[in-house]
Structure formats: C-alpha cells, structure tokens
Length: 283
Image (cartoon, rainbow, N blue to C red):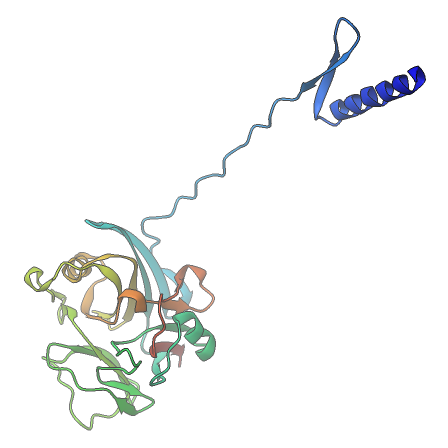
C-alpha cells in the first residue's frame, strides 16, 4: 500500500513539474515537503486597434469614367453615411430591369443581371407594379407623373439626362430606351435647392437618388442609415462640393440599395424586395 501511494505521489509531482515547464504554472514545496502549485499570471490581452473610417474618402477611380466616394455627415437624427458612384454618361449606358408582380433584393438583382452597378428604381405598389412612368428596353409601364416630378432617361440615340418635368416635360412619342419618373426633385436645374422646409413632414428614412452635375456626369447616391429628411437632404446636396445641376429622389426607405460589382464598400443591400432596378454598364 505504501509503495502504491509513493508511486501516486511521484506521478502527481511529475505532472505538476511538467505543467510548470509548459508555462501553465510553477510548483513550490511547503515546509513539510508537500508540493504546492502556483498558477501563472493570466495573459495580458492587447485590444484590437481601432479602425479609423475617413469622414470623406475623396473621389477614387474604379474604372475609367467611374469613381466612388463615401462621405460621413451629421444630421439632427444622427450620423449619416452617403455612398456615391459617379459615371461618365459617354462611357456608360443605362437600363431598367422590371418584372411586374415579382421582386427581389438588390443583391439578388445584381447577381441576376451581372451589371456593373445596380440600384433600386422608383415607387411601386404592394403588388410589385411600378406607379410612375418607367421604360424598360423601350417598353413603357406605369403612369405619367405631373410636372412636379423628374425623370432619368436615356434616349434611343444614347443621350442620358436627369430632368425636371416642369422645365423639360415629357413629350408623348419621345423615343426612350430607358426611363424612370420619380419625385420630388431635390435640386432644381442650376443647383437650386428644390425641397423647401414647409413641404417636409419631418420623416427621416434611407434615401436613394440620381443626380447630374454641371459637367454632365451622373451621380447615384444613397444614404444608408436613415438619418435624412427630404429638406435636410436637399440642403446638404446644394451646399456640398458635388457641383450638382439637378438631383432627383428615387424610392427610399427599405427599398434603398446600391450594388457596385467588385467594390465591397459600395455594396449596400435593400431591406426589402423591389420589382425594378436601374443598372449601369460600360458601353
């Protein structure tokens, strides 16, 4: 029995010594010769470095004639993040893809169309049918809005424009390859603020819009965090350095989404499914 106890004691002592050698602790002998383990101090953890997100990335060229930019700005409702894609309309072409009665999220649309850029279009009903005048591959859908609205369009000859229907009305029979009518016009032609404070009901939401600057370039913008009311957004746009000539609000809220192929920072999915999208591809 004594020999068995001595062997057990020897094994315990050896195990404690092995643990100490492996950095798990150390052992000390008491005055009676009994081993007393001493645990090693806990490791000191170094926190991960904080990633500083720039307030403004500036314009970054992704492809000839296509640039991205991300701007953070504060509103009374919180910090908003604006994602922008700017394209040269001479180098890129538009299309509207629409499936009446059927809808899917922006990421799914992007996977289906394989477009360079995909974003949500105009307003639609609960039955997933567009409400405003929409032209898909030359085929018209929806109804004409009044002169309060605006329109993004590409003519059959390839000319692309964003226009306010009050100053440049739609002409029946106009040869359009692609078109989306929506409202309100947030920046009127000439860079004039287009949505006054007394017209704002105070609601904030995610926002999607298309604009054209004074050089004729197209800008597709989304506010992803839902901190902008329409008047505040119109004011921000006119006061920004984007040098906008006109800006048109598209469907927003849970429909807002923008997906730029190969650029993870500009891949923001919609919260809900949409039946129509605007796509951009190189000519």
